[in-house]
Image 1 (spheres, rainbow over the protein chains, first blue to last red):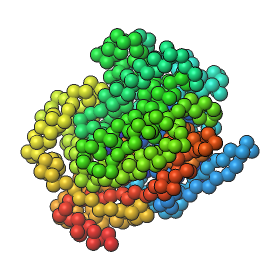
Image 2 (cartoon, chains in turn brown, blue):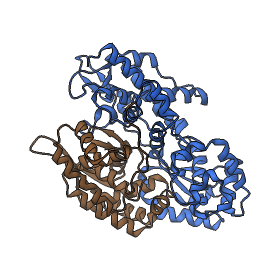
Image 3 (cartoon, rainbow over the protein chains, first blue to last red):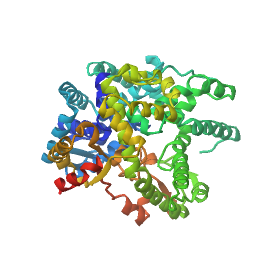
Image 4 (cartoon, chains in turn brown, blue):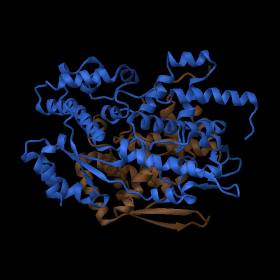
Length: 200
Length: 351
């Protein structure tokens, strides 16, 4: 908690840019826009709290500001974006931090001035990156819903995810509840909302 | 999407409640207090909806607080998607309302939005991939073009105005200073969370208002801590920090050598570098200009504005409008804020 408050002392753009560049520095190249969005959503909850515009869309929590910052980074030549086509004819975007971006990332990390947080975040990003885009989508959705409705039991939470994500099976969703165990080791701030009464 | 009269009535009722309640979680000075006091107004909104007196009022009108919350955070089921889109999207009732209202109250002449045309040409699209989403008929393209242009102009002239942003940064630095000092006797009970190093609860946010904070700024302006008192006096006497535009291409330099230069100038002139020299980014604002996302990006539906082409197919607005296409490439400058007393020296050093 202290870390979160201390970070809020930085202007939000400094913290946000530091976090995004840190993620792209942890995995090179970072493949997939959905993976970038979901990884940052989860990492932001582990001691950063500087990206505040996450809203729920088709693939789960999505930040328009993160998408805009990535565009800015490309224009500033801090990040290089390449795209390739998968066997299923999908376009996958990859992000690689440039030498200039690396220098900026170092300056920003120095401003964050919390070596433990930086290391922890890099490890979390590497850990999350091992999962598929679908898994990360489910994990981010699970965490988003738990934060929105903290009173949901695990079973009810799985049912809610299933309602929103019909293409995933119950077992798949249930196995991705492991995200809470993963995040626990990385300083996750649990939600503070009291339950909202269901039904009228 | 075909709905019975009864279903339309229900959607209308839930939509009206969601729209009326969507911003009740705002704190004093609206968005300005959010990053300073460290809370999320959308979370506070949901929390307030879930407890009396709001929840009881909703229940009395046969409305489920949870359904309203789900519409607001976009997690309601498919039939409520158009409502979520109307409450929060690139063309939502909030934006349509605040653009007109802010233009009126700031006296700006170019803030007009062709509201009736945009609303009367809005239809629900019936086919994938935009099934159930609101899109506009082709004949609305000029009104949409004008709406995007208005957003761009309002963004630059009002929301990212250098003076209002300068005042906001000062306020943020006041809170930062108080949180660093943790002066228990100088913090009223309503702001106790700052001295206790925690985020405010929804009830604490609900209890705050502009007058309370203004009164507190006046008290802190008499603080023994010279940084705190200077920051507060600058807000109260409108001696705001001054902006220096930093082109995006120079931000890399600014975050490194540039900033060291600025900080040493500030220190030499007796200003604390951590409180009187601050960066501001165009993405720090809650109000953003319209930026179309690429077709393979997530959920184009809500992050893009769609218009039906002459064949009835949805097209993202920048593909049928040269004006919107051109605006979508605009790069907005970052800013460095510093006291007027050192602005000239800083400008010289950065050239």
